[in-house]
Image (tube, rainbow, N blue to C red; front, side, top):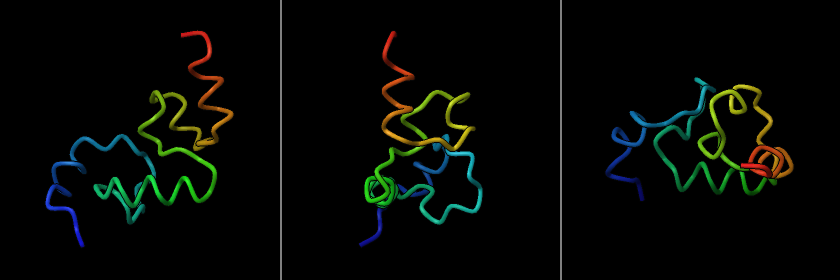
Length: 66
């Protein structure tokens, strides 16, 4: 089943990995990253997302003192 809001989600997607086949498919993106023990890029501020370090450790470090 495909999401009927793919284009809407693509427009607001903050992921900078351009060849990603999951852009706009948020459920698939979250599932993919969780299988890799990561979080999607949209969970991170832009400066961290661009590093492609999507680890839970990086997420916790990023938001630890906010």
